[in-house]
Image (cartoon, rainbow, N blue to C red; front, side, top):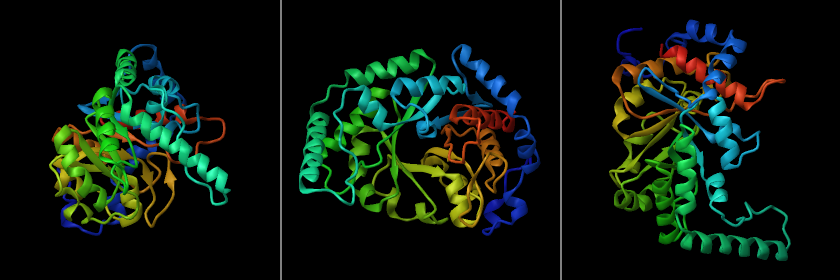
Length: 329
């Protein structure tokens, strides 16, 4: 395992290869109590989740089952010992004073309800086009003072059809005010074409996030060709579940365009999310590759497996952090 993985010579990864490092992984999952106490102890001071030169972080979506204001999230993050995060855009905008946008329309809505929803959306857009960046800079300082860097902000709709240029510029300004080096959204060729010039102008990356629709050649196509600041937010768990292949060849090929990884452990054949070390995703091998190659992009935990009874998202994310620490030791 000390040699550089040769996965690119094996397009269809065998189960043995996919589970490389599994013995270590299984051992890590056997120590939940020590895991929680060890990492949680970091929360007494400023957290540090950079292990062996690899920045381990989390997307704050991981804490969706808990109170999720920007300040609530900071408490969860520091309790896990995490020092850098991908922050969901909703809590950031709420902190900055955004009016409610009304959410998605329900299937059954009266004409009056639809009209009210549209008015709320118009009010949110008007707010975005005139919002000062002071509150975002304040939020950045609060996080930084606690020892947490906001390296990415997620605005999943940026670049969608019908979005005005002003709203797109607003999202990039927010990212800069928060100190983020990139924005993440879902895969979309149309959005890439629209966002390429904006990303280049602001010199802030767009990272395209995948679900199981991805193929090993998705990023070989034109999606990254529309701007030098367009990149990849590769979810390695979804990749394994959707392709039944290791993500390592793709990471090796496109490492210079990767904004970040989402790390989770899923089973092949579109299988379920599992605690780290119990699925088919070579999480430990990916982290060791990042360490060996000294690649600068972060690996962000996305907690999607079912939280066991008697536990919570903070405890489970803490276990994931410890798994990463041990894998990088």
